[in-house]
Length: 407
Image 1 (cartoon, rainbow, N blue to C red):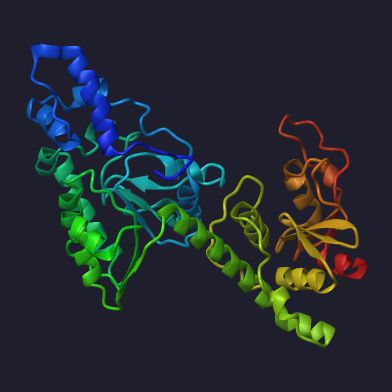
Image 2 (cartoon, rainbow, N blue to C red; image 1 turned 90 degrees about the vertical axis):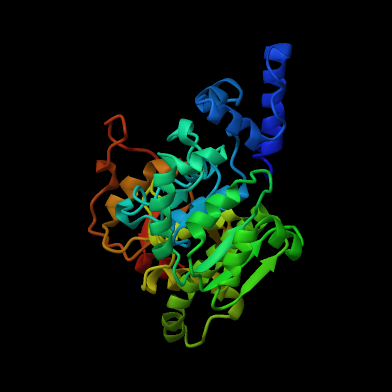
């Protein structure tokens, strides 16, 4: 519900449905109940839940722009910073937030669907259902919990969760009291989970949270290493978590180059240059991509940098020589430098692959491909997407050794 998403609460959805229903039927039928659970159950018992969702729930009600919390979850899932996510949201804002990050968030609505994620992806279980995958079977009414297909989904999700969350550190972000029956779903799916630790992020008082979310409070009580409550906005917390994650990633990459820097220079790098620069989340995400050598159009899929010193050494040399951050690049001696991991690649091939990611007007002056080999072949052999030969001005591409001599 945080901006710019601003999705409506269940109470707002129910109020809109009641206005539409009562204005349509007037005195012909009894007024629609005010609560969303009562509304949905009324239609469910008539065998008309599909009509309720189609006629009285705006099909675009869950369409919005992702907020920083959605982007954080998408990034941490794609990069394996989170091992799994369980959500009661039926919207696709986390999946949508993954698109600008160049990745597809893997989701499923039951334990079977997410038990074998492709390529080792970190999965997201949507225990409430999905507005896009199976809108007609999203959970709205208590009666749905006892009949197919929902009862089967809950059973398979419970089985998967018992294993997936065993002895894990759990982060619980936000809770709404609008959906009263949600506790039943949580109890059935998470009732037997044994976590290592639990951190609850919710603006309410601890006692208030325990009263409105009894099953989540009980889950926290089973944590073997303790439970903690942080009273802040979920979106703000997740945005900060993502920022910290990126900074730790960059510090790790720099630290891998520190021993080599000390050997080559005769002194250790300054502590300040071993820290990540103070930049925003999107910029730090781009730096992480370059530290991993992610090709154009590909997402970050690792939670830690490679165990290689070349990229970290190059960045330390730039910073120790007076270089400063310039967005995701580095400014030194009046020139803008981009450093990417190029291990196992030829310099000319990398130049061809990256050419269309760096149009001349925004391109850096120099691109250092740390770990790449220069075999003297021209990058002009690379072809544009329209199959014509790629030519034109661009940055100077260098191996690490050439750049070190230039620097």
